[in-house]
Length: 212
Image (cartoon, rainbow, N blue to C red; front, side, top):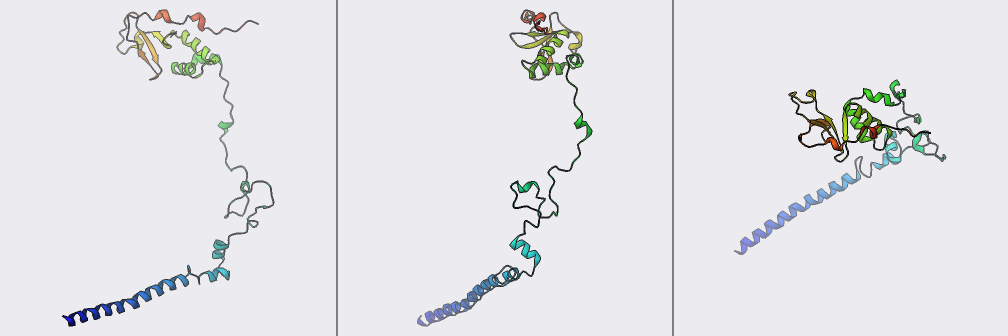
């Protein structure tokens, strides 16, 4: 038994002595890579000696005065700095050409144009321009096209015609209304309800100018 223990002790001792040289060589290799090579301490010699122009530009940077920058100026430098790869200063205005249609002035909107607009455009002017004179003119044009504004429900109604119904069958007193949620004309379902009494009088819709 004693002999067996001695053999196992010698085996562990030999294994330990075998691993030590390997670990020592591994640390030596790491230290060697930190010293040698382009990215080690020895690689700094080429930068210090300034033998490589590309490496000097990367490590030491560039002289901003060579790039056309006036470091003594009180203005912002970025407005004239063309970049590190440009030999010319940047222009203040970019080089582009606008189409001629951008220089054309749109014609002023006149009230006489409202009669040529589509129905949805008139409703857009009425709802999108509150307290504007064009809202009043749009309402006036809608009344000219037989649309009526209900004061309480704040909805536009129009007496239905065969062309407003898909099958052409119109009941007596049938109305259509303009739905602002779906932005379309829809058939009003309640035929028996008297909604005409809540319409805004046409006289109140007409645009009036104060007499001077």
